[in-house]
Image 1 (spheres, rainbow, N blue to C red):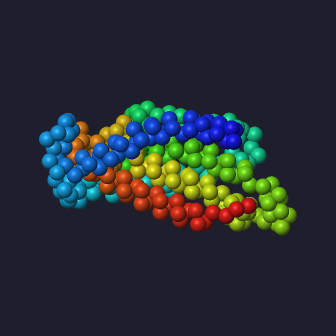
Image 2: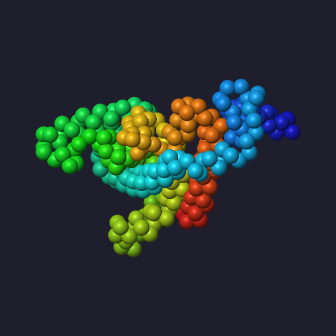
Image 3: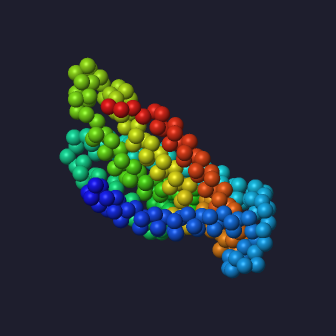
Amino acid sequence: MRRSLSNKWIAAAFIVPSLFIFINVVLIPFVMGLVYSFTDWNGFAFAGSNFVGLSNYAQIFSDSKFMTAFGLTFQYAFFMIVLVNVIGLGLAMLVTSKIKTRNFLRSVYFLPNLIGGLILGFIWKFVFTKFFVQVGDLVGSESIFFDWLDHPTAAFWALVVVGTWQMAGYVMIIYIAAIQSISDEVLEAADIDGAGKWYRFRKIVFPLIMPAFTISLFLTLSGSFKQYDTNISLTGGGPYGSTELITMDIFKTAFNLNQYALAQAKAIVFFLVILVVTVTQVVISKKREVEQ
């Protein structure tokens, strides 16, 4: 009885601080943001603000710039999900093979994830605007090596390249853990039955690492939708707003246009969309998971 009571106090000592932080940092600001989105709040004192109903939400859907940013964010998330997970899984397969440099390569591939998005953006900004131009002049291949950030389509792909370079090493770690958790007996049995490498990967490895796919897809999806730091440091939304993702649009609405209530409404809509998309993805991925 005494031991049971002691365990409850220990559990409470871990839970209560986290719960306190969650309530004050996440829950209360979210509720306040929800309330602000139904008013004409000007970003300062809430006193004096008027209830405007759904007018902020109605204004969102007539904002072509917001809808364009939303569409661009979906495109960015799609390419990020595909490229990050394909490359991350490929790297994981490589460094779980018997090559001698596998431990060194793990560190190299994971290294970009240790660098913040702002720093990465500034580094790659130099690469795209200076290095690429000099290489293009040197080799005479200016159709490939030019200032990517000065062209709307190329600037979008620059965002995808940098995001993939940063995230692929991170999901590689998740896939490595999943691959190494597969029982050696299962793989040996497949070898004895004469299964080739591709057949073994498709029929054994791939189904058994589905839980890793669920996690990696969720992280890639939510991270892509929330992308801001690389966007601001690499392209700044340019050229001409062609690479402005949804988070940058919300930021500019609040702090450049001083329309704080409208920005709150955009953030609420953005939250609901992420919630629906990520929950749907997790439910679908979970159904495809199998146990060893």
